[in-house]
Length: 508
Ligand code: FAD
Ligand code: SF4
Image (cartoon, rainbow, N blue to C red; front, side, top):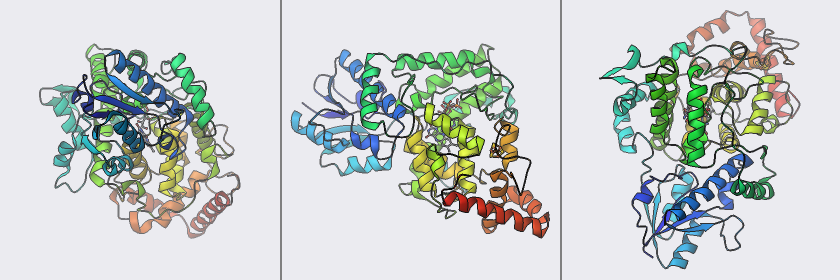
């Protein structure tokens, strides 16, 4: 044997650089289901099942294609249950010390591979539009790394929605059109769902036995688990959901978990879909006149803009990034993040659907759970660990910048120019959560006051030094300062009571 070719569970693409660099005749592909990866945070059972089922199918496909694959199943008796452990075992078995791997999307694993006592060559993951070198070149010398400018570079580079060197439709960004509140009814039936086949059923049994105690429902399981299914799911979304994606991108409904969202991030992030194929499908639909420009542009911006940008930030900022705590928030994550009782209907609904689907869409993550965590001053490491565990699409390179940076402002403002905080009014405008909530969104203090209303001012007040000079927040401070002193004292006292109750484990 010449070399081992390591393929991790989020690297399931046939065009991946490690396979391109490999020799089918002599190299051995190493794939391993290991306990360490399943449990270093308590991953949602659906997420673990997605990855294991997709790995098994990918390995079968490689074998059909003539590759020699050394595959370790989780329950194999000689499985060492760690990635370096499995590499060492396979190196011994096949009499080689050479390993080719793709640089993982997580510093923890990169270090583990670098420390592995074998001759490991790490190749760049080229399934992204911007290479590390391109991102660094863009970031070089800039005072602020704002997504919008990076996104324009990516538009120019890919030619997506470009007419010569001008943006299609005359504008780079149609976000202004994409803020419609929740519609009364949704005419998209949601993502395509797949009935588990035998491979998936085996994995479901395994996950139930090994990780059934983790937060979240394993069944019903309906994710796509191979490239063909993922492509069908994409086509289904483009045909039936995309047209209104833009309009209702920020809307939330208590009883509709998907609205017009694509649910392709889990597939993109493990390699079943390629970002350019996704964007081309969207661009084609616009060219064919099937979807408006605000839908196509809005969607493509998420993929070639935000997705690429957060990855760039993660690697640019370095290994300490996920643990930053710029606002020095220390409170423990309350039990209701793990399904415990809360009277806040918005939070309770967002957490409940996270439990059933391992999914919540962007605005639920940002403006409900994330907003609450930030207002309440929860420790961003604990918050980040929660997001990493509970969402099927969560891998550290994309999760940490979104949570630590965008949502919790714990990176000191690298990603966001101001914190994403709001009172209950925003949630009420964009959703139907507040109808039927124990709290009253219109009540600011006293009996029935919405906790978001109280905590919002508490947040601004306790971080006055940090934010009062921020041009985009001046209005908020002026509003606060105009309130009479008694009222401000009442707000702060009641907010503190909410926080104390939360910390004492009482239901809020
Ligand atoms: P759609 O709304 O249909 O969007 C289309 C695609 O755009 C997504 O599939 C995704 O690939 C991409 N995208 C959109 N926004 C972002 C973004 N901010 N960063 C990266 N890609 C984006 N996304 C993850 O993939 N993994 C995560 O762990 C993750 N954690 C998040 C945590 C928080 C606090 C927030 C606010 C956002 C997070 N996101 C994460 C981004 C976003 O919420 C998800 O990508 C999106 O909800 C996935 O669902 P969808 O495929 O239906 O997306
Ligand atoms: Fe959430 Fe407040 Fe609305 Fe209740 S009233 S759903 S807590 S925003």
